[in-house]
Length: 88
Image (cartoon, rainbow, N blue to C red; front, side, top):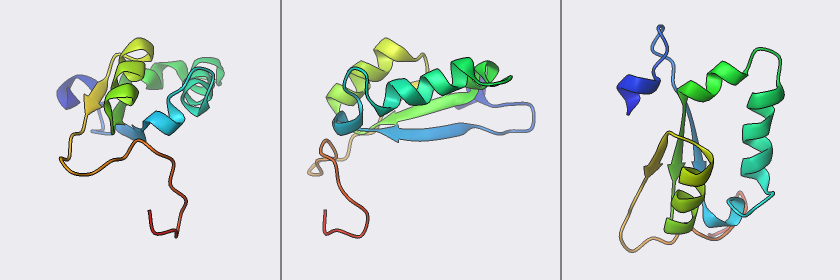
């Protein structure tokens, strides 16, 4: 996948997504829309990889975007929202 999304200068845009942020009309929709409507940013979608941290996020990613990667770490649940500097 990285070969297909890498820019000429070897740049790739990477973000993560979990179930908490993958629901309909959520942050992921706004994030992708900003690329579509921004000044000269639509082409950057071709260089964006979304790392899905759970099954629901991966399914939603596939419905929205063509470059999705399912990261599976057994024994770790990334599906819920966690706040910065909190134990989760």
